[in-house]
Image (cartoon, rainbow, N blue to C red):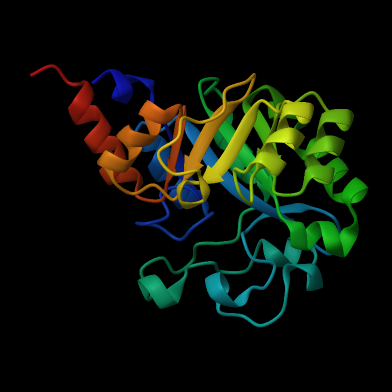
Length: 251
């Protein structure tokens, strides 16, 4: 019970079990289920606009050849991202969203926070300064509710320098080498796949808060909370939110 009260649930690419990932319906569903923390991925379009998509290649979620980098934002906004391999024709008409379109969901909802992951492919394609500056510019109206995160240390260093949004580092591994870096950086958030955490050890404490992802079961969530995780990130939003509500509901 005590551990359950401490867990914050993060919707990984929205409610991405039931809806195409990183789409407006996935994020709306997560919010309707009572989730207050969303996570999404951004790549830059050819003309430098942040687009919400995980892969820079279009094939997996849209079924089309080519890359986000081949298209301007106006073209990408008309592309269907219905994940037909998973859902068939169920979500026909669901489009690739621009970052600013997703952030519009925050209007009048000050309790909602969005973790925005800058993907490495865009950093390689366009350069750190350009990508980070475009993301920082896009989030300005909602910056109090946004956290800029990345696997790339250079990206979050620049995010801290260019804007006043909090930052988070997504760890490749929670080892001593990484610990030296994040103790120096002192980000507000640390993200890590639960499989890459040191086994059965309490998470290192500091001015950051831990977000542990790829969590799909309540027992795993509770064990991570006992080790010091503050947030649990999941694609199984409906099941995890219901399980946590059940623990918090008095008998």
